[in-house]
Length: 245
Image 1 (cartoon, rainbow, N blue to C red):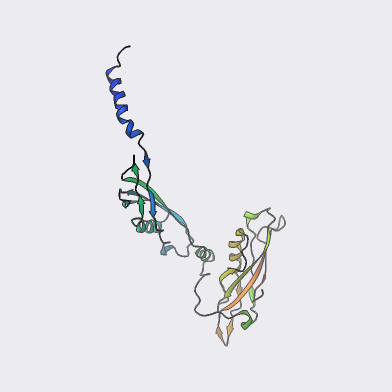
Image 2: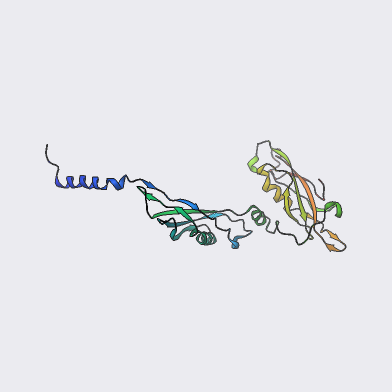
């Protein structure tokens, strides 16, 4: 057998020398303490959702170092993610069982709270703390509806055959606007946003008692049913209001 050429022999030796590192057992860091960032105050009631990613080094003691903002769908998401990342703790990464520093990328997802999404959609404060206890519908009497609910049947339920009566309670404020709508029963999840959107657009004759504007409890029932072909999908029916239950 002919001897291996010198360069080939050195390559074989180098491969054997590198083999331990090529086949080393790598264990990724695992978070043990991972507080979530706050939803940015500057985005309250905008309905904005998004993500931020941060590159960090997880050190051998499990702490986080060298954080770098890699991306952010909105600068405020990056700010809140960076504010919380150094509070994270990890079980450190390891190479063949020995702790080592490791670079990792951590994604943070931000989702606008449902109430804020509704506020953004309605372009006003639909959900808010009340300055006083509302009157009951029984104590006030019947409210007069100026603009009734017009629920839109969602396109996501097209040809599903789903039809449902959705009951909501809410408060009519001194301006005759609906605030703080809540469901009396849990509806089909696809009807939640259309139902709240519909009652949020209702208006009433501003309620007054003794010449003073007051808050009054009320309720309504919305009927969702897919309209016949050709009538369009925005043809739900609203009924109730003025304290009917």
